[in-house]
Length: 202
Image (cartoon, rainbow, N blue to C red; front, top):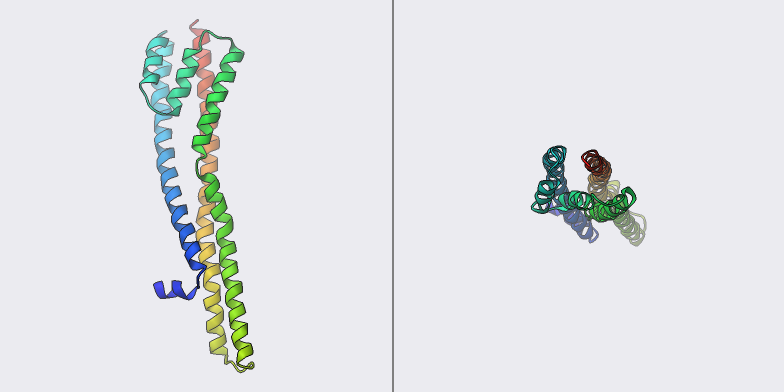
């Protein structure tokens, strides 16, 4: 397998680097979104019950003792309960923007890798084909079909490697983008419900 990798030429190394970075980001984001999803429902259920019971101070203490951006946003929503609706929406929106930046962390890198990996592969193939035809010219066109086919498939290795890295990377990127959209929508619903519960309980 490693010998096949080496036959792809020097551009196989940046493709390999792209694959390592992509794999690391995908694992990190999977773990991050798993933790976020669990915290959203666990924290919100307990806070909602406390607000329904008319215990905003206890709900605030629970938010402040829980690490993470979700608890921080809910704490802001409870802390500013005596302000106007317009002020509440503005402050929660500002906190939500910071949270969205955390959700989208490193996703841009995945998009870049998904776009440049096939281009690196194509560049490797083009340079490999150039070497093949230069060799044919040196030999005065006297090259058998077997030798020519061997040079071509070696040149195509980088294109295959680039696509092998790019396809799962782009799939993961769009999957995480969808997760971000869903979590943001859920957080808007949560923030709205917290405000409505506070209004209902005075």
